Length: 363
Image 1 (spheres, one colour):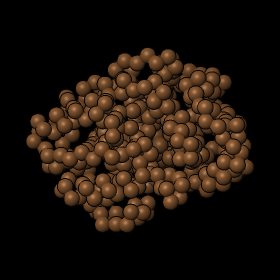
Image 2 (spheres, rainbow, N blue to C red):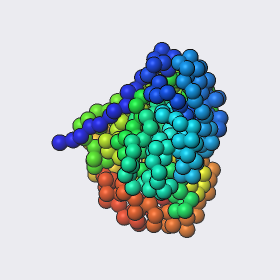
Image 3 (cartoon, one colour):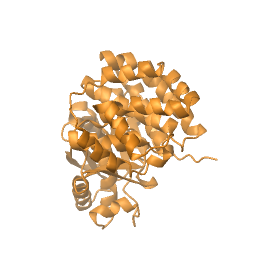
Image 4 (cartoon, one colour):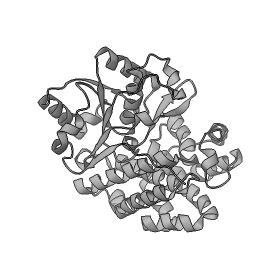
């Protein structure tokens, strides 16, 4: 028996927003949540405001979301949305603005302490949201998760609730085709990580596996584009779809230790989330192969690579010059072993195992 929930309407294709304008309108007054530059540079912000003006919808822009959004940024966004009388939100950007939008949607209609959000009990339903991703990575547009930075614990922490699924998501490669190559690589590998972790997760099901393999086939098809930097709008739209499939998969399964171990690399070393995952992913798949070789072979076949070719691909796409110390890795493993996704990992994991993975991948 397995359960499947995916309430987000996904509209995928070039000019998907302009050709489906009415789908964007979820209320009468809107807050647009975006990063400091991503929405503007991608062209998505201009397209959104054009539609809102055409439809006579008043809006405010909250563009204070940085990389790895903090809970303080989201709490302030919720306060401003409430003060402005907004009744729906539009998130534009990569995973950071899209995750932040979910938290803002909760805070905007609930009088609560900043940290209560992690309890997942909201008196009032969050505001409805539309998503326009400008990177093909997190798949946040199709998940019920929001991952926020908490400086008080020196780490990230997530909350999850079915009411923070986006109502609609528009996937248009025009908004990602001009991304810097390394950003495109990092985010695609984040999507790949979702697909592989979800596929090997103990919560995986026939439904999530079917979707995961399709997402892996898409990324595998464009592996050379990611290595060489040759992108078209069509390629980018397909990669956005693969990222959304990754979001759909982990909405059913969650992630594994790759994510919880990767958070420290992002928090302490400012390594982009997708790159952090990718630095650990090869060793993870090696270990998964020891306990589920048939399933790992299916995943690698979908990518069109052997495990060795997969590891070489990751190495080529993720040049990382950051140095690490054994003391740092010991500290991080003591924290990451306590993560909720450790029990769903396909192989048994101890703190010593995680430390060994860190050492093999980073020293």
